[in-house]
Image (cartoon, rainbow, N blue to C red; front, side):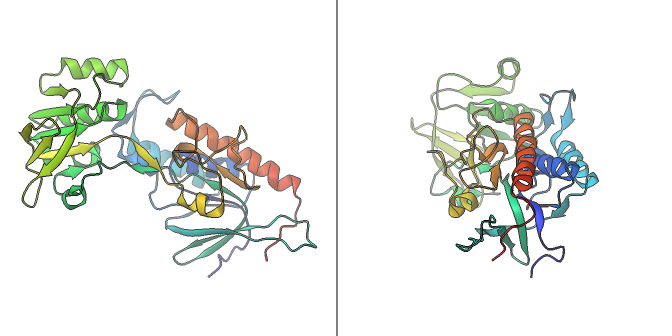
Length: 318
């Protein structure tokens, strides 16, 4: 079924901080806006504390997601919590000079929009081990904030050497007897303050130049085997080795991606497809933070409004 409110000005795909920031600004620009996403607040809601957002000294990730959600609603953005199955663009006839609208389909609805902002974010990167899927939620996790309490007094490891991994380690150290940090290289790439906390902690041990080759266990994680051959008893494994962009919808529509499958955007947050914008972690912008994602989303909202205004009231619906 097609949404009863008919043609939207902007359809935003993704309900994380970038999508919600775009929803808030599109609402402020008096555009008919719908935000469609599966996870209200997005991946930031799995973060323990956010302490690098200007103007807010410290805030829990779940609370930040909630605040962004409330702000988008305040300015009239319609929220739909469902999965987008496809995006299509109506191709105008040879006689028509009007740009084509976008058709966005969920499992139960169809939305029409003059412009689309892709803010689908990323998913946790996997280890790539054949047994990984079988241990998912059986000692293998991708979110310390979500699952740390289940490992109170136990021994766990965190795979990764960046700041996200460091934060996971520090959260787990508050609950666990022992936390190993498994780093593929010979150096930590976390923020200096987090590096210092790790090195000063009595129950954290960093294993440099180490990679997990195998996970063992009967029904749950019981040990890990490193490529060196060393085996350690382990109650839990937390993976923090980065993220993969959720760019499949954009790619199928014809948006240009880079070698990492990130959506390419210009300084206006515009893709190679007229009327299709992108913002946040799904894009090819190098530095990915809440503040930069929100800024890109605001940029996309402004230039989406400019695109719609420039093309006038007539859009081809097929």
